[in-house]
Length: 23
Image (cartoon, rainbow, N blue to C red; front, side):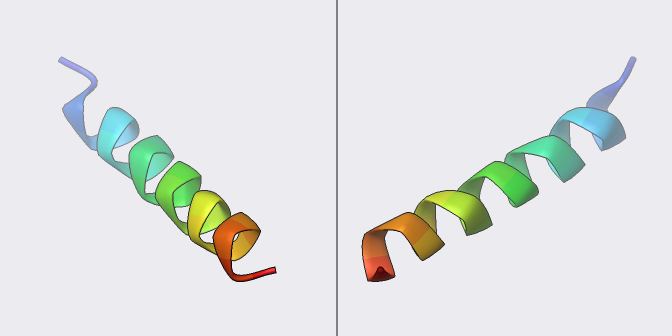
């Protein structure tokens, strides 16, 4: 299981998306 890796990637992607929305 690579759940922790998936969660970390998902967190980074969500933060990146939020930054794109706020720009």
